[in-house]
Structures are given as C-alpha cells and as structure tokens.
Length: 250
Image (tube, rainbow, N blue to C red; front, side, top):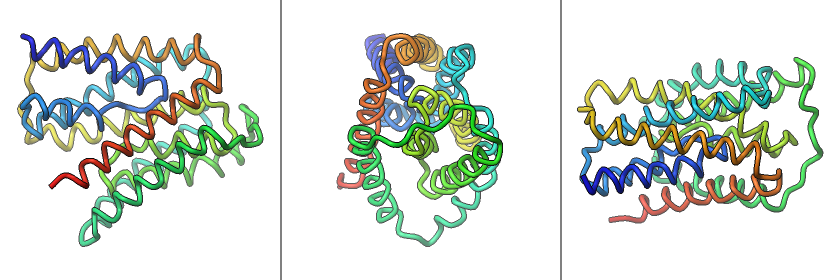
C-alpha cells in the first residue's frame, strides 16, 4: 500500500510538471516504476498508457481554450506516424549510445533556447502553406528521431515550435496532441509482452488525470509565456539528465 501511495504521488507531481510543457512524463515515470521493483515491460507499457491518458486530459483544456494549431498538428501527425517505423529500422546497426548523447546535447541546447532565445513572433493563424512548411519537417523529424532513439516526439516538437516563433502556450498545446498518438503506438508495441498490474494502473491513472488537469490549468490560466518557457526548459533539462544518467550507469 505504501509503495502505491508513493508511486501515485510521484506520478501526480511529475505529470503536473510535464503537462504544463505539453509533453508526456513516460520517460521519467519508467525509471520511477523500475525503482519500486516493477518489471521493465510492465513499467514501459504502463507509463506510455499514462502518457496517452494524461495528454488526452490536458488536450481537453487546450482544445477548449482554442490553443491547438490544427494546421500544424495534422501534418505533424501524418509524418510522425509514417516515419517512426523508418527510425526504428535505421536504429539497427547504429551506435545507440552515440545517438543518445547527441539527443542529450539537443535537449540542453533546446532548453538554453527556451530561456535566452527570443524569436520573431509567428502568426497563430498562419497560411496553410506556412503551416505545412513547418509542420511536415517537424513531424517527420519527431517521428524519425523518436523511432531511432525510442523517445517521445514531444521533446523534439515542442522546442522546434517555440523556436519557430509560435507562442509557448500554443506550442505546448499542439505538441501534447501529437504525444497522445505517439504514446498509444508505443503502448501497443509493449503491451504484447507486458503484464499489466491493474491496481498500479488504476492508482497511477487517477494521479495522472489529476496531474494533467492541474498542469494544463496552470499552463493556460496561471503561467505567463516567459514562465511557461522556463517550465519547458526545466522539463527538457530533466529529460536530458535522466538520459545521461542512464548512459553513465554501469
């Protein structure tokens, strides 16, 4: 019972933080679950399903507030889903550790951009051509790199959208919607060999829904654009540290 309570509280806190940024907390939740003795495939499947649940709850708020840039999201979804298997295929025979270190470098660079780079604001209702010109390459990169490294595409989509000049709240909202489908895809891949712990799933799902609702509310109602950019930077650094830690562990 104590383990379930602690796991639920950690899930709530991490989901709140990551939902503010519009990315799922699976990458952080997996090692948390492993630390409590949960089997790897079960941890991965559960965390990815929680990702989908949390981002769905957050997206309800983001959609209701009119923050999702659909002209960007739809082409991103198409290429992210289409190129993810290509990334998985390309990963065979490549030095995964080198790729992950490059990913860590990218996250640190992106976090620095969140804090210090001030792009020219991009029109929130850009033309279809402009939306395709941004959405297609960002979605393609997110799908391919996500498949290559086995990481969530939201960590790639979010800084790219902010760097393009999209207002941080709209960038977070748009990235969160793409993360839903990326997480479902990953869950379906892992659930085949995982044994889902129903009690763990129920407790963490309730914590995830509460955390996602709180995170989305904070992002839309309480945080300024500058504060949200700092929250995004914190999330990116957290993912970078976690990835580097995994690489350095014997």
